[in-house]
Length: 363
Ligand SMILES: Nc1ncnc2c1ncn2[C@@H]1O[C@H](COP(=O)(O)OP(=O)(O)OP(=O)(O)O)[C@@H](O)[C@H]1O
Ligand SMILES: [Mg+2]
Image 1: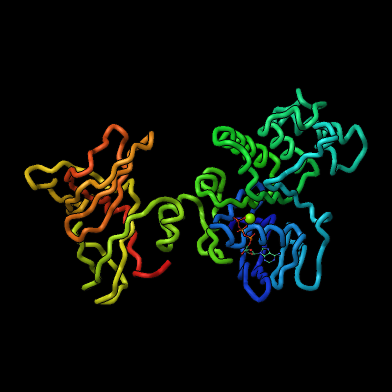
Image 2: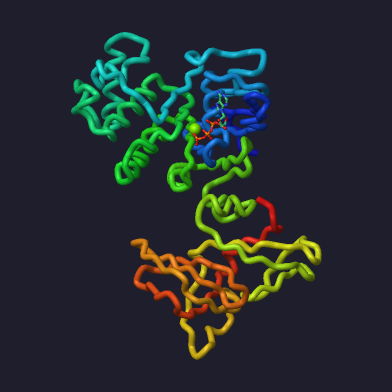
């Protein structure tokens, strides 16, 4: 048996209510050293509240927090925030305007001057800002200020880094760059990182693990690849992309649709199911005198629809179809070279291996 590593951060069954309303419910997760876990979920689902409890600026109603196997906080015992060795980086990271970059980074550091200076230089080298060591924050760009804030948060060697939408103040191009750089630095430092975001792209880009939150609970947890490819319900699919929903009724563990039959294992006869598919997994084919392409095992049976709307989106086009069989609307993304006109009849097939079948009405 491989030796079990102790998680750097471990929270168990955290709960918090405000005015009788449960805002965080039974949240448990652990993060290993050097690992990035993203708390991902819609606005108001309890992400920041979870982070604030770990930081110690908010008390949980119940549940425990451990760092490196030692208890940090439960309902009887509480180490104050400043002694938790937990680094914080929030959206409004506010550097001290009257201090230089070096002084900002050194702010939370103990130890002698030489020791402090060495750590400041080490971090500023890592975030590539040594040339600005004596500058004041207002002389730096937004991205540079962000990197100083990162250096400041990492300076005291926190065991855990909590980051709450730290990149949301940056414009798109800069954000991608800073995210990648930040990730490199965090990995080198070996802190356990819990990063809050409501942007799926950010979570996919940064996370080793995603914890999907909804209504105060973690509804699914796993590697980005698994969450994207094995979502547990319709809402989990919808969180990462547009979705199409095709409804059907189960008969003998199968459901018939205009796109062919789908397996619905474990579903009783008469159950309603929803087949969920992302727009990028629909394929478009031309109409040949009222005929579509031949059915295949991979794509099933084609169904005909009429283009309602087609939008050019840069890398791809988004086409909306009104389907002949029931008037429902399905969306497909296609390479940008193809932008069909409204009114054109086309055939759609769906990638059967990319369909998710869920009981209707769940999620
Ligand atoms: N101090 C408080 N008193 C009362 N309600 C609060 C308090 N703090 C948070 N809440 C409520 O708890 C819920 C969760 O808030 P939280 O800030 O954790 O959400 P979030 O997931 O971080 O959302 P966002 O993505 O918008 O930042 C919200 O409905 C919020 O209004
Ligand atoms: Mg928040």
